[in-house]
Image (tube, rainbow, N blue to C red; front, side, top):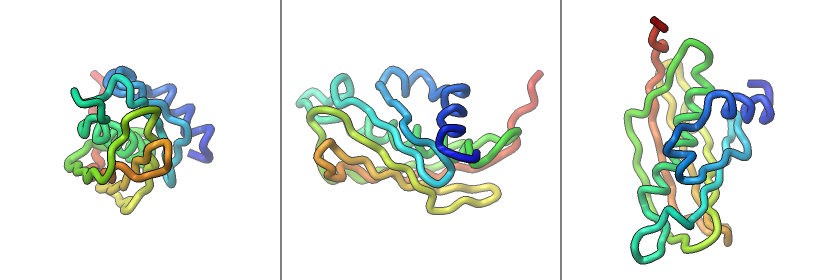
Length: 140
């Protein structure tokens, strides 16, 4: 993709999936080099009111997988094979923002790091995802 606008258009056309939609994830920047999305805390919390750890992972995996698929290009498909997260703070209100950057972009493997911060700019979680790139299945 040539620029952020092309990347955001690609996301709109492809869609981010029903889970991302249900969780309120919104992509605000999107390119191979840097992708950004936000997610509300409300509706994605644990019983005690903190953003659920799994919600951080969903935001991170959504960003990393989509970025890997953009990188893979037409006729190829990136599929997650490993995801991990380290939570270092909590979000209790507002939105969190995930910033996804590539660590490795190879012919068959990508690795992305997603730094997720709260509205105060404090890092709450670091997610890392590895995707394998394969030829997309042929349409029948």
